[in-house]
Length: 390
Image 1 (spheres, rainbow, N blue to C red):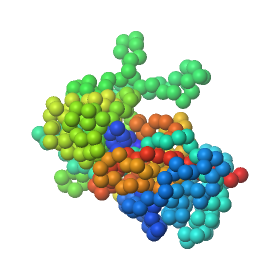
Image 2 (image 1 turned 30 degrees about the vertical axis):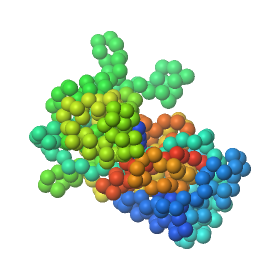
Image 3 (image 1 turned 90 degrees about the horizontal axis):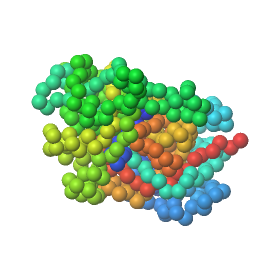
């Protein structure tokens, strides 16, 4: 989530569409390769047969819905770009072969993938959402419109690795601060927003900062044309709580129109105490650091740029960075969404809302078009891990 953590640094962070609850689409024509700095390739509207007919074990690639329509060369290029972060020896060997191989056409790429991997189902049905790297206007001084500060990581925020105290808790961390002799949880969103800040990094519109925190990073554009990247620096450690369901349940948005665009538009139209109360239903708060904008795609938790449309944020307790997965996502829940996303993607990010075995957040790229698509992704997901042939 880009995050960047997603998320992770980007996610969340989409949502977009994990935004808040928090393509390869099937086509006879292969998807075009995804270039750095572009949005995800558009899925088509024709969906292959549902994946419920897939056998539970001993799968072949031909049994994966949409496999024959995949752009295997684009998928292999994405794998080459991200597989170096894998710590699995078998995956590292395949990664080395992929990077050394001269594969320049679709048939050779498909042969390489089918020769070096075997598909393995992961769990039951889960959820696919999407996220993107947003671009938002910002100011260096406060005014009525740009009224909320972009906050840097507080000096009193402490992340404790519990594994240093008890072996059973290796990998578990908690976030808080010291009050007298006691270590307590860090304040939630409402408390942080109520506290003044003497060193804001920039000023933004409230609803756009909220979305920036969900995504985990993004580019801020200043009035003089300067562009700076707001990168994930840390969080208050509170769980992510999506606001889409709450808005639907309160009758603020219809059930089938809780997309990122719909939520953002509502928050902007009700800017002030009413919108603040909704955003504060999510206690998680993200802090940032400013870096130069190099014009490249956002960097995920794995430390490499995220290939648009080919990178996913996953739960790191269930999946390893650098892993290769087949997404079979259909049955969209939001109006205006593409019917299916069926494609190979590399696990390169994490996100606060991305928890569970069959849960993925697809990185769509940067800019408004990527954001519009990401905000509509909320699809039933069947997930398959591509296991290296030993």
